Length: 170
Image (cartoon, rainbow, N blue to C red; front, side, top):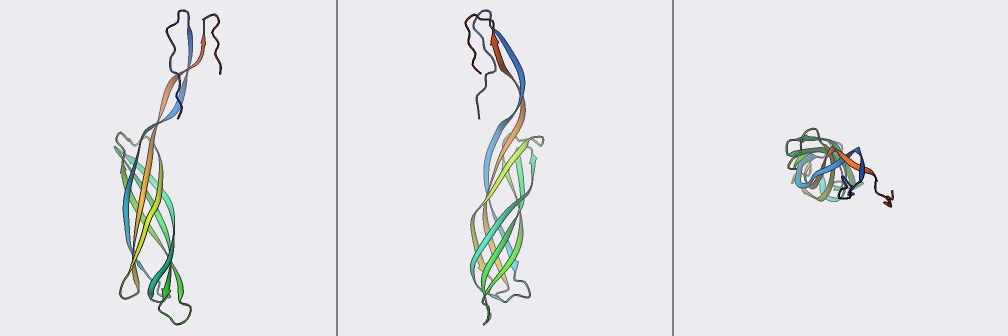
């Protein structure tokens, strides 16, 4: 963010030259949280779950939609779950799932013709294994942030002349 000069006045004989400059102007920034909950099935070729050992997640944003006063952020979570399987051999197994999410963030003044810069991060992940060992509920807390910008054309000062002894440094 920089400050720009849009006018100079107050000195007799001063001549100001201006040019149009197109710039992104931040209308607003906001953050929201969402709990994404999904029941995940163990693939049929895999053994039942005894317990969850570890997990890894990857986020991918798939789109944004700006509507009046809100931004809708869409994406997917690729979840890799490492678990102890109910089997006498090779007890550690991995299953992969994709979970879609969609969340809106309120940004007063946002309009459909404006640009948006979204970011999403995972804040927390928890699992509950079903008693049958064939399903698990994943609860993922996401932090969804957006910055909405609008393109503005400003008249900015590019030169100042007309006053003896005036020095302009660019």
